[in-house]
Amino acid sequence: MLSSIKRLLQKGKDSTVSSSDLLQQTSTDQAVQVEENEVVEIFPKISFHPLMHIEDEKRYVYQFLNNELSPLKPNQLSLSAIELETNDDGSATVTAFVRNSLEKLVRLEDAILLLISEEGELLAKKGFRLEELGEMPPCSSRPWRFVFEREYLLKEDLPETGFELAFDLSKTIHRLDIDPSWEGRLTEEQISELSNLVNSLPKLRINEVSLHALRASYNEEGNLGVNILVRNGSTQAVSLELLPLEMLNENGEIIAKGLFTLPPLTIQANTSKPWTFIFPKELVEINAFSQWTIRIPEQEVI
Image (tube, rainbow, N blue to C red; front, side, top):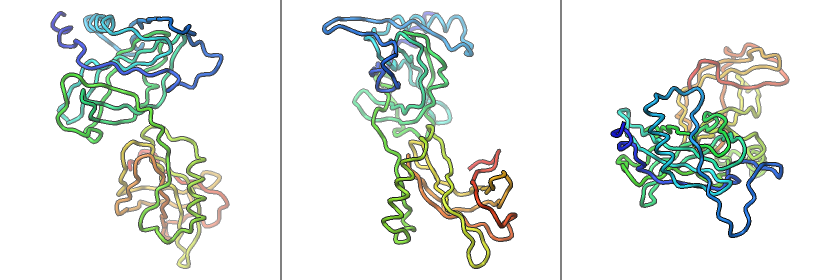
């Protein structure tokens, strides 16, 4: 057991933010009120996810490591990095404690995490769905493993010590991305309308790619063309080469269905790109419709 503790002695750093930076708090939330110049230290207690199976020896190790961490001030969230491992498939796994000093249950949502070297160099960046951590008790500390796949790593050689796992607090705005091939095809008014639409659509989940229907019309040959916004909520560009699509009417009936080969189509990180897909007339099953939606068929992979 002693060897396990020595191996997992904290090799990374703490990164702490105010809970208001990540949580939508209201005046009714149970935040600790601290008088000016008052020093309050909070030592979050270990909390294991109820669905995680952790052997007794490892529980003891986590408990020991948690007890060694620096205290938090009231109303803080912290990522305390413990270990950084490089996996056989080229990915990297960071083991860290997710800690909070709030006097209420905490449920985190989507967040972009940064892996940073001791010299401040960005090593990796990826969005995580932190709701998987579950509901964390007040003033608790939960060990978790964060996997950065190879495509999210910006450096091949990763440090064994001194690294930091941090919340990305930059306010990234989801924006419209017009493909160069569309330049000259859209007026300034049309671009402005598309940009306003992009800003008004519901926020995407971390790493979510979705489709939003814009316009459909038949050409002179009887083929059905549909304009779609391809939306990318990832921190990385997404390239589509084969895209299966189904177009449905208001009753859920298939209007048209096809598999599209693309150039590929690249949608930059955190952007929406308009694109036109043309269903040949022989793939159109329903000619008349008033409303429609577009989707990727179930069990199909982009």
